[in-house]
Each structure stands twice: as structure tokens, then as C-alpha cells.
Image (cartoon, rainbow, N blue to C red):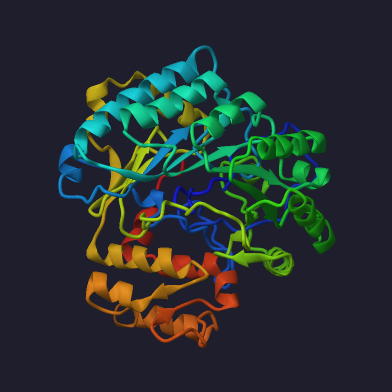
Length: 483
């Protein structure tokens, strides 16, 4: 999985798939309307993981292709977020539907970095001369699939080509147990990384195999030790609940083992079984209330255990150790609801107030390889225009602001919303908010002027979020051609 640059920043780096595994997970509902003809049951707490809006499967080809210089001309550029995408992993986990390929034959990583540099030059030329970055992230895929020399070059692209001062902003980098080597971590620490996020998913070997993610416990422990030795300020560990055979006891074992490294952050992700993934190919896809109940039960157990261990809940997924010296996620002056994001790489997204855009998206390995090959072969001039995306309406802007605010545990000051849009959430979304209140998902004890979810509302974030998608976005997702 990958975390977004402003948490997101960016599920964990994709590391570890297997050729064999024991029993597949229980039949699962698809995570989003566009992922499959099959739908989760209407009352499932697990409809879709909402980390961006509009969903990327609502994007389409842009005709004509707009020039980046025009798109960014009137955009504020004093607190941008920068995301560099590396679409390579050693193997692919059974649950992974990220844009990544297995391996990079020949000189592919070098050719990819060449293309990334050409894109960076073209994009930087489209920005204002005084554009400034407040946050940066390297995601994937697995950025540390690159060797130490290549990681240094990646940092050079961010700094010398884009103008991001990596040593003065928050820099989050994803890694995996097998690629978190001492030389790679030394490069990242020296270049200013403030956060390393490692996908472990489970410290129980049988559960890792069931998720099609074999990994040796000793390898995982050694990687975590090396990250701590590198003295990067924030260690984040990703764990998954809802794996076949997982119990409260085994789940707590993974939690307690992770806590042994005193991570500043922990992300707890529910397992989803998505089409075209290793697990999805073996799964009948029927809604399964029993599996929903298992995931919800394990979520509550994990939440309560971390709260008792001295962590505070930041969102449904994110927990932060109280008292930890954590650099501000996204930079102290970056607001993910309003500030723009520059994405470089063939799996990255960019956000302006008017258009969200990217390259084409795929899950199937053959299509991913084709898109990467096309990206590597592009001349610099081809990176000066947007290719796939979705234009933002005023309604989309309101929905995005509400989603990215209310899904955080602290909630949203309604004055911020009114200052931006001239109305209140209750004015714009009376039906949705009434439904949330009816379900007990709103915190009735929240301070006046603050819209905040209850504990149960946070637990149902993956159902609440999709309920705020616009009909137009839902329609576009429904006709998306899964590939």
C-alpha cells in the first residue's frame, strides 16, 4: 500500500509477492464501483478506500491536451507538494493494485530516471519562477527498488530540476523489508528524509503468506533496525487486518511486535480484494458480511490497543505516538484541501484547482509495462501537456474539501469551509449529513462550529467517503474500462 504525500504522504511500498500461498482470503466485496461489476453489500463498512477525490477511475483522455503552462498560470504556487513515482517492485503482493511492475530488466531504471528528468524540466518550465515546495514524497511501487546511486539521482531531480529543498521540507519515502538496505537509507537520511514508511502488513508468517506476501521475520526485523539506525525522524509501519485466518490474538501479536520499534506512526489498513490482483483472480467476489464483521472487529481491537499504548488517532488508518517529535505532514504551510500537487512519473497524479490529471492508469501487468515503455520513450516536449484527467466543478471542490477534512479525526472547522465557499456543509450536503447523523457517524459532542466524526463514523470512513461522491463521478467510475 501507499500513503499519500500529505498524510499522504501518500498503502505501503509494494514488496513481496509469492508464487504459492495457503488458503485465499474470504470472498470480499470490491472496493470501488468501477473496480468490478460486483458490488459490496449496501451496508458494508468497506466500500472504498478514499485517499483522493475525484477517484482516478473517473479520469478520461483530455482532448485537446491542455498545456501545463496554461493550467498552472493562475494557481498559487507558494506551498506546493511534490510527488515522485517509481513504478518498480521486486515482486507484487497479492492485494496490490498499485501502478507497479515486477522488476526492471536491463537499463530500465536508468531510462526511467532519464524520462523523469525530462518531465521535471518540462513541468518546472510551466511553473512560476518563484514556485516553492512545502512537502515532498517518493512513492510507488517501491522507491528503494532503486540502488543508492539512483536514489541520489532521484533526489537531484527533485532538488536541481524542480527546485525542492529536500532538507527543509517534510520528505516521506516508502520502502520494503528487502530493499531497506543500509546504503540506500544512508542516502535518504543524508538528503533530508524525515519519514520512512515500510510495508510489513503482518508479523505472522502464515498471514503474510495468505496475503501472498512471503517475508522472513528476520529480514523484516533487520530492516526495521536499519531504519532506526539511519536516524530518520519518523518511522511508519503499515499493517493489514482482515487476512484469512487472522484473529484478535494474532493481530495483537503484530501490533505488539511493531510497537517494539516505537514507531512514530502506524497505519492500519483493512484488506481489500481487488480485481486483477493476485488475490482477486482467485476470489469469487460475493459480498461477505462475516468478513466485514471480522475486519470491523479487528479494526476496533487495533484502535483500542494503540490508544491504550499511548498513540492518538489521526484518521481511520493513521495513528501517531503521543509526544513524538513528528515533522508536520505536508509541511507546516501546506493544506491538502487547497494547495496544488505536482506529480512526476507515469503513475503520479497532479492537482490544480481546475484539473486533476495523470497518465493512463492500469492494474494488469501487461498494460502497466506498456504504459511504462511509452513513458520512457517520450520526448521532453510531450511532457508539457496533460494527458488524462478530470476537470473540477465547484461541486467537486466542495466535496473534496469536505472529504479531506472530515475523514481526519480532528474534523473540520465549518468557518474554514464557509470562508472558502460562502456556505456551510449543512447548506450544501443536507441529505448526506442527515444520513450520517442518523447512523451515529457524527460527533454530537463536538465543539460548536466543528464538524467531526464520532468513533463509529471514523470506523466507517470507507463507507462514508464514497457516499460523498458526486453522481457525475460515480457515473464516470461505473463505465471505466478496467485494465
